[in-house]
Amino acid sequence: MIRTVLVANRGEIARRVFRACRLLGLKTVAVYSEADREAPHVRDADEAVAIGGAPARESYLNADRILEAAGHAGADAIHPGYGFLSENWRFADAVERARIVFIGPRPEAIRKMGDKIEARRLMAAAGVPVLPGSFEPVADVGAAEAVAREVGFPVFLKAAAGGGGIGMARVDKPADLASAFATATRRAQAAFGTAELYIERCLERPRHVEVQVFGDGTGQVVHLHERECSIQRRHQKLVEESPAPNLPGPSKAGLTAAAVAGARAISYTNAGTMEFLVDEGGGFYFLEMNARLQVEHPVTEEVTGLDLVVAQIRVAAGEPLPWRQSEVVQHRAAIECRVYAEDPSKGFLPSPGTVQKLELPSGEGIRIESGVEVGSTVSVHYDPLLLKLIAHGATRQRAVERMADALDQCVVEGVRTTIPFLRRVIASGEFRGGRVHTQLLEQGAFNA
Image 1 (tube, rainbow, N blue to C red):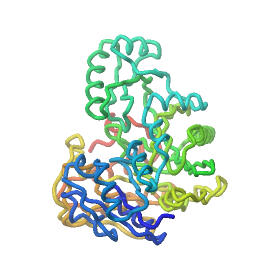
Image 2 (image 1 turned 120 degrees about the vertical axis):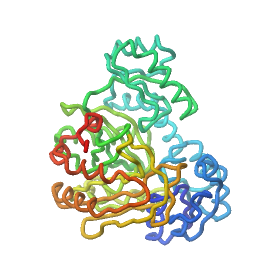
Image 3 (image 1 turned 30 degrees about the vertical axis):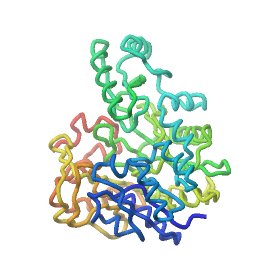
Image 4 (image 1 turned 135 degrees about the vertical axis):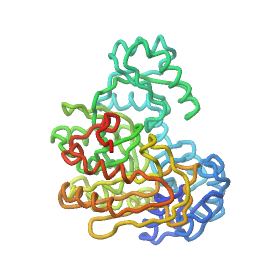
């Protein structure tokens, strides 16, 4: 039985989990670094424990300090949020060995999906389409060239332990392979502690569509439909929506079936997301699995009317899933815009500083998930996500109109933000027409 939940995270996701805990009558524990001593998520919790210095490696990435905090507060469950230690199987294993409930998938599932090469093999064995490429690490430039010539240029070099686009390198022709291999190897080693790379064929103008899945301890796995995530910068999402616009029915049916099959193949429990690339003909290919709650989960919640975080806690406590597949229905359309402290005019460089003014929209069809308030410091030490703005409506057109109005009402001063860029995205003909793909930003579709 879960009574006290420690959230091993910060910002808006910590506040979101605390809200779910309050609905269930659970005590909440926040952890905080020196930089976050006055942060809103610290005040939101029933108890707060300091865990170290401002750099994440001294605090939010320090598993020992987090486990010490859980022991100090008497927490019997830990929710990792997203980022930081959320997909660290060793942390999940340490939590379980400490006889604390980990509110997420089992460590073995995290490990399997964290190794991108093993994930490709597992998904292919489960009948999930994967992109042509290598199923073993490419040891050197010669091995990489042999695979690349077999699958055809352009290709992507990817970190075997990576994710979220970190360490990816596109190679358009054989002459570029050696330098790209050196760069990708160096970045993989720095980011993930291993230099292993693999190769996948590069799709031109693909869509990025993901499927929310959820499993429980009884072996039941359901999908909660799809999310469109094609508006990105540096392979990082900026705008997400559900349903995915202009997605052919057969493609959607195939995507959701493949997502459930993939999750079942690894006996997946709790919330997770299967991510796919969709080509211009509607064919789809497994990209990766995020073995955690996603940043964009509110989109699915607004479309289905379900509370994913409450369900996470209940399933982690040993309860079966509260819904059958037939009960998970898309009732409306929803869009999420991520507002970052970044300067789009300077290549989305982070914009640290202090929030001096903050005016946010409200009203029917609007939801805000924020980690900041007036006076909040946007630190150089953490991801610069300030807040998430979610708009929903009976139709996609209504959701788009509400999002446009909501962005016009957003005022953030003291740091530069992505709001002006997001306004251009929502106003663009490509977005309004649902003609989206992952390379729109690079092709200048949203230039001022």
